[in-house]
Image (cartoon, rainbow, N blue to C red; front, side):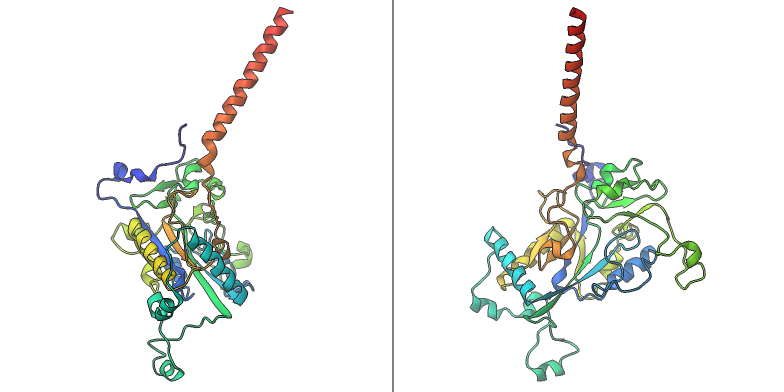
Length: 350
């Protein structure tokens, strides 16, 4: 059966021998929620304001998720002791299923926060003396923040690209998926084709009508209105051998950029280290090339299940089932033709 999905693995055939897939590795364990990546993304790509700058009430957030006017989104998730213990129990089950093992309690006690990537902290006197260089970890056994900078996944099998009727979406020489606004007709088919809910059509940029916004402090010019918009992985920077704006701005290197294979290897090494230190809740997201989207270009290290971060646990590219669907349609059509022919022949015999 013919596979109707596009084949991003053939980048060399399309672009030449020096082509290499690029991507992100986002380590949420060292994200501090500063939103510098959000600001850098909007500044560089001239992404318009999303909403009216009012907090949602659910957390320190005014956008809520990715969309046409938010290409980077930092999630703030509050967890109490019960949720923390549940996350660690879930992680231990993953470890027992073949994830890297972790050491004895005595070994874990020797592995301090320094090895995990968090700052060291000692007695109150030491913390006061070194609070600038080594601020204390704010998490406690009873409470913690989960912070994660979400972005377009640039899937190996990109549903948005598969279903685009105009060819506005295309695979670049870096393995990323980019929208050509001058070709996009704003049909919105790609919106339904994305299993992550990333891509959207751009509206006027705020919840107010143009007339209401004309004299307000939120007035602005909106680029590429009524077309599909999403992260480009700063394609215009990549062609000049520059790092994407969000990764370059991140103060903790929570967002890492590089060759996709290197990012996956770095993610595997990182999660292995965390498991050895007893952080059983750490798990990778998007690093499995055999998942429903063939792996993603933006790999994540999470400290809880994907659903906690608003990510689908088992994303599936919608075009995956098209061959089987067409096969069943063909069988049904053949059956109808056979029935019609039988009825016609029977009627003539009478």
